[in-house]
Amino acid sequence: MKMGMNFLKTARVLFLLISYFLVVATAAVGQTISSGETLQSNFSQTVPVLDSQIDQLEWDDAQKIQQNLDLYNLWGNKVESHPLTLYIKNDDENLYIAGSLTGDEHDGTMQNFNFNTLLMDFFIIAFDNNDNGAFQAGEDKKSMYVLNQTPGLQDEHLLTAAEQQQGRGENSESQDTLGGLNYSGNTQTYTFEISIPLNSGDTSDIRIQPGQKVRWNLFYVDKFNVNFYQTIFGGLTGFNMNSTANWSYIQLGTPTGNDIQIFAQIANESDLDSSNLEFVGSHYDLVLSFFPFRQYTDQLKQQNSELPVFLFANPYFVFGDKFWNVSSQQEAEAAAVPYHLVAEDGETIMFNLIYPGLEFNQFQPLIDIRNSEWQDYFASQIRKHIDLGGMDGVFLDTMDERLPNWAMAPGNNPPRGYTAEGWKQANYTFLQKINDAFTGTDLEVIFNGISRFPGDKGELPNSGMLDVTSGAAIEAYSIYMSMDTNENTKKAYFYDTILQDLNNVSQQGKKVIIEVYGDQDDEMIRLYALCSFLLVQSKDTYFYFTKKDEAGGLRWRPEWDVKLGKPLGFYQEMTNGAYSRNFEKGKVLVNPLNYSVVVSGLDSYRDWKSGQQVSNITLPPYSGALLVSAN
Image (cartoon, rainbow, N blue to C red; front, side):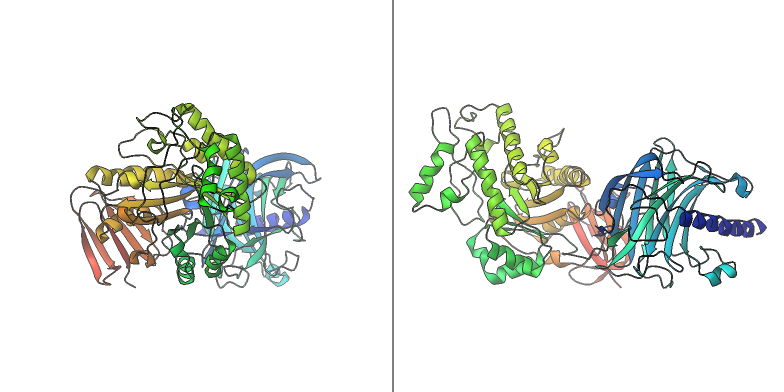
């Protein structure tokens, strides 16, 4: 007990010294984030595990900030610079901040509570609660350090004169902030993760709601000691603790879309009915539209202003003004002839796959994507019509660096003038021109071509194309084969498509849309497909299921309305071979095996459809269960 009381007394003196240091240290420092800049916090889709180890899956839904943090001595001279990475996100209750600073050795020792032996590094996150331009008594800050190999996190505030006279410590308030700091000697890296309540009830803590903003700063002090010998310091946006005028802001994110993220494809003119567009805009989380017209985009975004709407375009088919602004179909066809993809005998190669859910004629001539004139024209037209339509980017259908079988000439021969390598290079040249057309904008490029067939091993197809785009579509397994064709395809869907491909692409920070094809449209097949997806769903993954004989059509499924809340961590494999993932308001289970398994201990859940409470559940082979909290 005596040691504990001595430590508390020591901590109070320590943090008074730190506060004094920060107030007198007012040197101007360089910065990447500009003074007064607003940093957008993303609304959290996953509650992070606060273990001071930054897992990318836990933070892939956060706003990511990278810059060098310059450190200065007391005379304002720059001494060192270290890479700093920050992650910022929030939900309805907490602000989550994680960070890493690399390339600095660890200082954190004090012998027998003797301040004269103190040498330490520490981080401080400070808030100008009332946004009056001054960091003053009663305002909020959080300190993190590792002292004698023991991490410390202090929830603090600047003391008033009365509190100082009373001998109170800055950390004498309720400790509402969770998390901690860790140092890795192998990589010379500090990492921290903290969770700050948006309204803890403490008068000195921040009180803020999603959508609002707060002025803040992050500081790092290296080699702090009572004499300030060799002490250096730096801040995210300046290091003046009296004036907060050069601090930045964090604006909290707000929730958007559904708990289960579903994408829509608007491909038929019958989909353009106003009531249908209203439904799509209010129910789906990402839209691919064949129609680059602002009136339709506006109707969609009227329901959700943040809804991403991408132009659906295929670079192997005619597109643009020279085919639309003609007097006859014959004139349009004649304009396309110079661009045709042809066989050795000069015959045009026709697209030979039919999607039954599409109402227009799909038996069309293919375009030669190696044609530089076509590349330039298509890229300029894409940019023009995306701008006119008020869209967020382009979805490039069927782009594939491999020569696809639907582009082969009769006899399974390559098109005239093509080799496999030539086709690959043509795709990359094409993609580069589209990227160039988007330079200086926030427009994104997503392509459809990341899928592999059941049994395919090795590197993910088209991974090189993924490197130069914002994301990709996975068709499992598209028009060639349905997910539920046989046991092998069901296993491949779960282990290869979901746990491997979808998970890996998502971890790269890319958008992923996955369209699952099924021979059957029964609930069991749909739930197996959906619950498997939910095991790895993140903020940039989107799902759709279609029956194969309705491919290309638009349809809503009742299970997509279920409210699960945010995921609570990652999926878990159970001892019986089934998988699970917990959510704030529910749970998903998947059995990817060819025999039934029983899952028990489910007393706090109800079936999503019947509403009946369950205690245990038998999962048939290749099935999923969607459960909601009983409370």
